Image 1 (cartoon, helix red, strand yellow):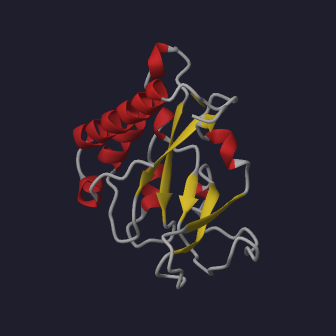
Image 2 (cartoon, one colour):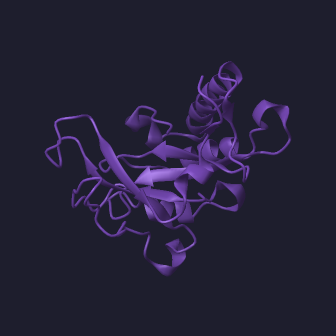
Length: 181
């Protein structure tokens, strides 16, 4: 997950692009250093931008960030495996769903990772998948496929945990480790 300083998310195309460049470079560096780290078999590595509940996201910043991610020639493979995605609260007062819905072309996120609602639960007693979705017709092109249903503090967990569920096989869209490093 790309987690730039939250104030930058309301910034310019150039700020979004610079943050995406740093994020893509860090993923490439990890991939180059850890030989056991491979791209997903489906060649779709979902790259989530972290937008917290109380943060605005400008279309300019999103276009800079998402455009760079979608057009990044990862390791000069000419396969363009990076797909922009957004971690957010779809019902936030900052209209993130409207912002990403206004994006065109490759800037449209492939997925939303919803931080709400947070009913809590455990790995043994998970809630049914119920992530907030970008709900109106203009937002329906982007679905929530990942859901944070519990985290440290909000659910009373003492360990630094983040409990998530997916309605797709999320590991299929992540780096995979093919052997022990």
